[in-house]
Image 1 (cartoon, rainbow, N blue to C red):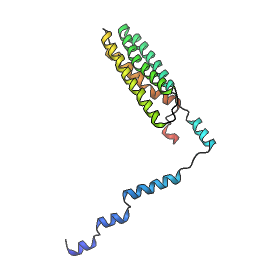
Image 2 (cartoon, helix red, strand yellow):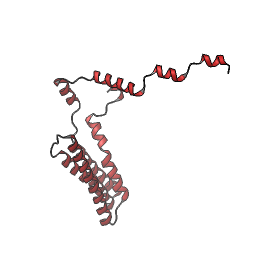
Image 3 (cartoon, rainbow, N blue to C red):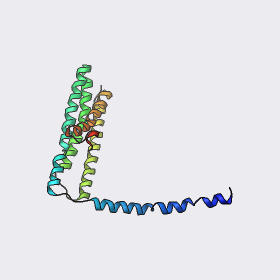
Image 4 (spheres, helix red, strand yellow):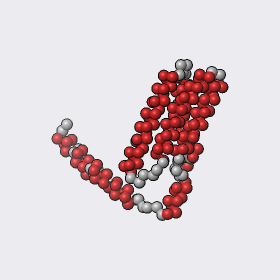
Length: 180
């Protein structure tokens, strides 16, 4: 390189410093824009938003899980004509529905105004749900001689994944073409 070539090129560090603000400054500017864009809703706007997005009850999810569990038990019975597979499917449905119903009951039995207490309550009932699920599965494995793991696990998965159908049925997921 000739000395003339080095003079013609500007220092990239000096350009970067002048062209863009530091990250912390950019973040504070974005926060200021977000705060300026925020405006509280009027009473009518809040009511319209609640009407457009109704609250989802955990009992709707538990009911859908129970119905899907019963449908899967009947399907296992009709497709295999083996009582052991239908019973295994029923145990799988019980291992999902009963703990979720207990958690729904515990989480909704009283309202909590403190956010920390609400989070702690939710975590407690989630722990109870997990432990009860494990206990049910341990009892089933120890007590049932001709257990069909395939029927048990597929029914559990089917009951757990029905949550998405509840959200679709309530209209929580919009088509991409809707723009929402």
